[in-house]
Image 1 (spheres, one colour):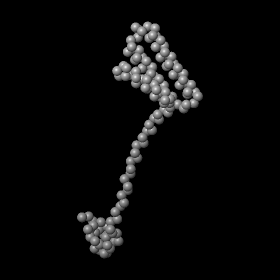
Image 2 (cartoon, helix red, strand yellow):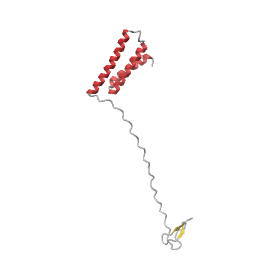
Image 3 (cartoon, helix red, strand yellow):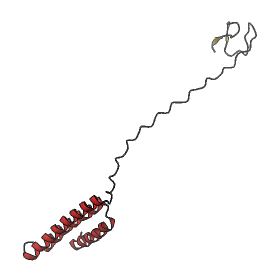
Length: 136
């Protein structure tokens, strides 16, 4: 129990009394203070994920770069095979197949970089056959 001042005559009255004993003014109903809505914590801003590099557009320049890279890989492949034909004892079959598969993996990566889907699938098929022969 606490004493509170009457809003009319300012005499202290019991907070349990329904009205002021001095002036008879009814006790004001306590108006509940509206609680301020709890402030929502701002969700931490997510850093934008780095955008994946889109495949290069198939314009003339990009196509030319792709063709040059594939020519280099084809030449490397042919050089490897011709060296193996000239001296078959220096390159064992498993070593030769491993090296050919490495070139094939680089072909697949080149196709992915340049967005050449059909060529990439073909290279992946060849690579899978080579991996199968190696037992991996």
